[in-house]
Image 1 (cartoon, rainbow, N blue to C red):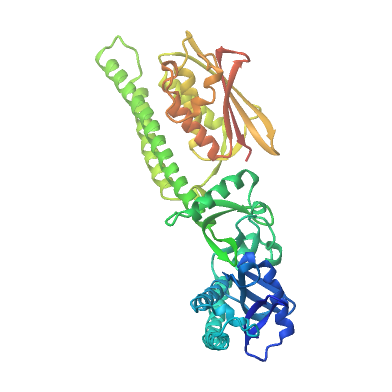
Image 2: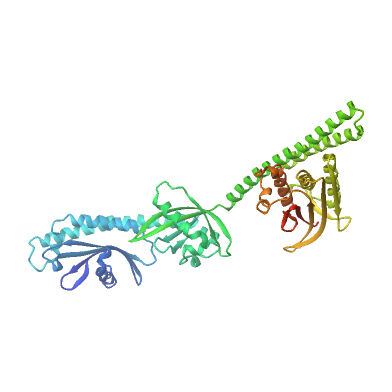
Length: 505
């Protein structure tokens, strides 16, 4: 049913159907709509009654000869309850008709056909009828086009690859959603409609989200915003949001388009991790190579002194062997870094290594590197064979911890006690390795900061930053943990205790 109706507010009997097209439309159903004239202050409204739905425009004009010195007309498009109606187009049609009506001089007096107060009543009445039926003829194809447009919109709305929500601007209640929205939220359309947008957000995010949406719809060239929403399982979904304001009848809505950017965020995270990883290995290479070259340089200087001055004691062969070992270590480091830069972290091979063996290699390196110092390193293992799943970077971590202990020590002799224990944390079994030294210690306010990259706030701790930053990165790559405590609780001046947790193999 597509009916075009003109209602007139009779000064005696009130609102009634005056003209209708087609004329076969039943007055009884249409009179229900006429009674809505009492809400004329709404001007334009949508009305549903039984099996019919209508878009209505109430028109008012001053008329000194009428009751209340005004005339009221209501023009309506009436369709079946199951039909779609494009509200904006319906309003444009009705506005256009009433504009034409208003341009006819004294047309409203034509409705007083029995009063004799207006000589041209019959002629004007015919003019109104001609205008009305002329509009109806143009109205029929317009409504057909309207329905086709609506069908296309619904098809696009349904098939869109992005989630689309129609939201009441005042309450932020969802009044419609498409299939993609159902998929993202893991809820049916029936479950989504009626929800408030606040129910799709984490409480701490919602206030900021509303402020961003208000800015978004208030600017013509605003960029999309990024947010996160919750699905029915409470899982966080990162989304990119575009929004614009739409008017349906006399209500304001927000059309919100959400694009799931989970894959993009994962890609971005991988890029960040790749960059971070490259920086890490760059620093690792520079730090390790610096140690290797310093050790070679130190051994070369000592070899030169031994060769030129017979009074200086030293084993030339041992010094040469040490230089060769450091050169070989440098070559292996280059090969290792090249390998791990070419593949993802997930593909970096881990192997089963024995802690005591790695510790002994680290102790040998530090002892050779600090041969001019009185250095005593004691290991207290709980067993001979303690296996962890790591890679050769564990040696670098142990060497860095021991090197820092030797460097930052103002005592006549350097004492480092290494204890190996077992510990269970969050249902994971770890080996707990403690490095207790008698060095200068680390104040409480610096215990966390010394693991930050490039930490060098205090000259007394210069050189700690890069080494311990790399140690932390290495240990965490094994799903381990590292922190520092006082060797004697409450007195940092008595030395430090670096504690490393590494999961058992």
